[in-house]
Image: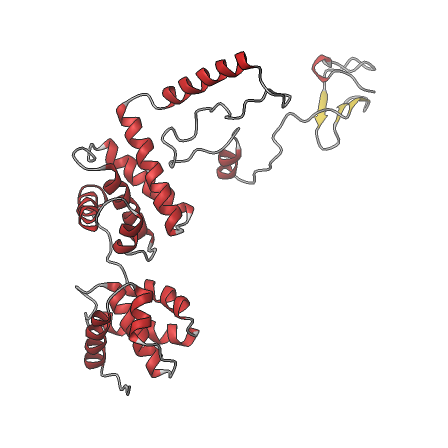
Length: 307
């Protein structure tokens, strides 16, 4: 028997109001006489399941989730660029002109003031740099959060949007331990290294307070992969860097240069040698830097090496 679920208030057999809706069986049943009053009822609940309160809060939503990478956090609507109606048919010229005007005003409404225009442009710049560097989504979100905080604290005044966006991305990489150098970010950014470095130091001092120095070990897996070396070379290079860190040999030196020198030493010790030029090209440093770091590591760590 099928009836409108909203109209069912009492059992037609015994008149009881003690009814139960079983959504697993899709039935409405009377608890007094056991009569199945309605079957194949619709479940108005969500299609997902939640096993704790945190999952329920995350999944209890409609539409796309909020994101910090869009200036309005993805909460506003957009008008599709295709001139089609709901049936997929082409719009008439008059209707198309109307939709064009609506689309134009929609773009204007989404970015209403100078602060939002600044934020929208900066987040687009962060997305562009992160995409070219192949950075994960977590870095993209973190850098957007850092830039938003800078806007709230009025730290972007007097500084270019491009430099602050690139500096926010570099700061996010530093916080998450992602091995990206300032030179790599400068290559895809639209400003110079000096300006990005100045903006980063300003952000670090005013917002982040304390960022741990980059560990040279973080760069070793990248170099090993680019040079097509074995895992044992990576382990040996990491061991060399850790020993150098214990005696303070890595302090005040570029982490990528120390990592490159450690990889070079490990490749020679394990008889899987790569030239200094190859390692310098992979690391993005000069051969002179590798030679200087190499001499320091060999002398201070007393590494027995023959070339």
